[in-house]
Amino acid sequence: MREFLDLHAYADGQLAAEDRAALEMALKENPELRRELDSILALKGSLKQHCQAGVENPELFEICKGRIRDLDRLNQANHFVGKYAWGLCGAFVLLIAGAAVLNRNDSQSTLYTSDMARLTQSLSPVQVPSAQADRDQKVLSGIGPAQLVIQDPSVQVLGMATGLVDGRRAARLTLADSGGVFSLLMVENINRVEMSEQSYTDRQFCHGKIEGTSCVTWTAQGFGMILAGERSGEELVNLAKSIRIIR
Amino acid sequence: MLFRKANPNRDRFERQAEAIFPAIFGTALRLTRDREDAEDLVQETMIRAYEAFDRFDGRNFKAWMLRILTNLYINRYRQRRREGPLSSLDEEGSIEPVSSASETPDRLLLDGLVSAEVEEALGKVPADFRLAVVLSDVEEMSYDEIAQMTEVPIGTVRSRIARGRAILRRELEAFARREGYLKEANEE
Image (tube, rainbow over all chains, first blue to last red; front, top):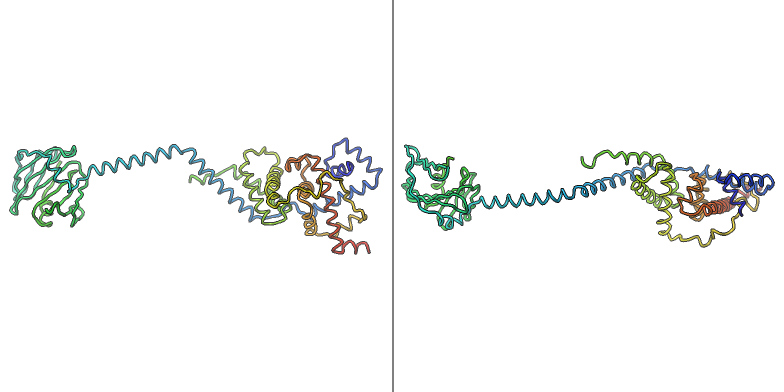
């Protein structure tokens, strides 16, 4: 049995040198061993001849390459997330915080017409400042650094109240023209005016009602403006168009 | 852009794998005896090898790939197919001679065979013996390499090769008799 195993190892070139010499001696003396070796070598030769070492399959190789590339992409994505996870989380938190601040600022810089009663309560009457008037317009100072320009000479300023509304400078003017009395509320640092009962809007003015009273809202030079009176929407819009803010 | 960077490691692996891919697929076919199983085995081998490529010592890529292939085959495919241990063929049993008891000359037996017949006879050799014979006679691996790949002692490798060849010779002879090659040859 040992001799048979050695014969296979000898045929495969795997027999140790010292065993090889002894086996070669035995092969010379034993024709049965020689015949067995020839059979092993013939079988090895037949296998080598008939079982080509390789079988081509280029399609399978392409599939393997595709899977390797997919694996690479997955690893790279995992690596990226692993490496920059803290940064991504930080950026996400900052994004949320930024959005919250923006949202807060936005809601703080919005004037709600439904809040008008509360807003005007905190204002104190002041003497109407003397207006520079000419043939075409009145220029009214005393509203912080801003000046109110009324480009309709028929409009008279009957009264004025000023004060702080939610930390912002605000003024309420009682105005009158040939059509009657109306009022103007202006609040500084406002970029949007929300009307609860809105009936008409264009790019600049929005018309609606506050507790049944017709009103027009708009923004100008960082002021939120509400003009209210017993007038039609069109008349109020025309009046609003004649009012400008100069900083 | 992030995921389209060149990957020299992958390119190197693919170049080396392409050169020995036919040998890997051929061995997989001879082990599994089923094209679909062989393709699955090769794909799994390629993925495992690529994942471990940074641990490859750079010496013999083909032997390293065949080692992964045979390990996968032994660990997974044989278990799945429930081939189990070779209970009917004791590894410690006596080694039969390769040469025929009926003294059929090798030339008469082997010269008449075609590749498909040899492959079919090889497929009838039990898996462990077939693996050893294929790695030795087709892939020309050393006993040391085969022992490492199959994780058995060199003595077991030697025994499996000898017994595998004896079984293969018997299968070839039986096939030749069935097909009438030997009878015709003997009559000549």
